[in-house]
Image 1 (cartoon, rainbow, N blue to C red):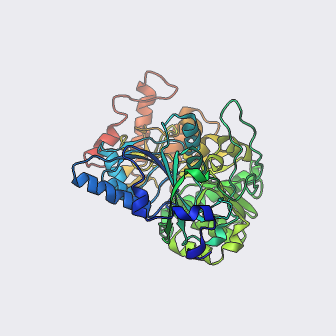
Image 2: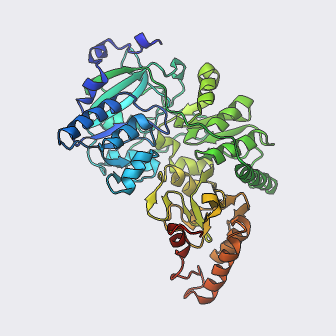
Image 3: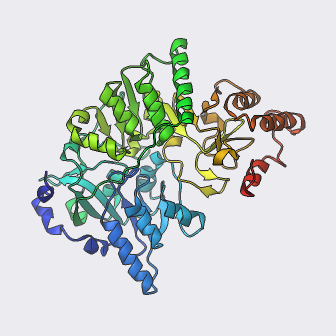
Length: 503
């Protein structure tokens, strides 16, 4: 499709207008569901026009703020633009924008950090209030009004179903070859009417390639031709390569023990350079005919599809560098049959993750000696991004792996601490911890056994003596000996860091 003919439904052509005119249809105080997941498939024009409108209201002494609901993180044209004009009252379920982060941590923006699999049912159940407007990017509109999804699906099905009014951005920059890649499942229901989800392999298609929206709800259509925001990934550094090596050795060990098949199990990987290093290692490793059941498809997985190592990948969005995106766009037809993009309520569905036996690999900020993981907060109270889908996968995975370098801030901060000041993933959901120093397999270990294993295998040598000393004194002085702690000093490490000292 060219830019001129992306809207094939004659009944909807009369609703085409400018982004500024569309933004005027969003009222102050509205809850707005916007498309977008990790910088893919988000609306490009209407949020910026709305930010300009809010800026004008601010100049006139008027307060204009909205609730912003998305699939996950978006881009500066959406989160950043609205945050800079103080236009967001409430943000959910995940963000990564620096201006949003600053506003949230300053107390000027409310933020609800939700498991991504929960968002759709929260909206359908009314837990979050009414969804007033949806602003959703699509790649095209068919003659009968069906919508060709864009480069992410996220919560778009829910937004289109639940919003009172809908604004569509039809982005001709998105490749027409996306048509047919998506699998939109309309079979989910609320309790007590739920039925089993008929998905037994990552490559299964259980829905249809298109989104639906009642024509009478569509109040505006804005034509755009704008690229997604793409994150560049740096080449794997030495620590990332070491972490990847430990994980690959672990997989080989598990295959040898008969606990994993020769082609492993469906892979899930969080976003970032360590995750891409693991994928690069797998691409050159001994495992073939791999599959992925994950949230986002990054450069590393695209390389694995290209090489033939990865037979199929299921996700809800792309998260690609500019170079990888150019390669995908140039040969999208080749990849289309091996990639499935689904709504995030399916890509992150706990029952499907558990049944498929997913291997979940996610990053963290820090872990404590007993295996509790903090993946969202710096020094206990400052949000970084959010839990995203890591909890959906970690709690339900066949193997739950968390990884990080052993130190941060040029060695001043240990990422292995006596106790994390914020817990996202409890010790009960964490099976394996990995740093560049080594891998701690925590399965089948008591808390005291876990502590010794984590300190020995994952802690940096600069901090290992202090951790060992803390544990020995806790074992001797703690009022309880099941999970020994010294409550009077357990957060001293973080307090020193807050004073600008080394932990």
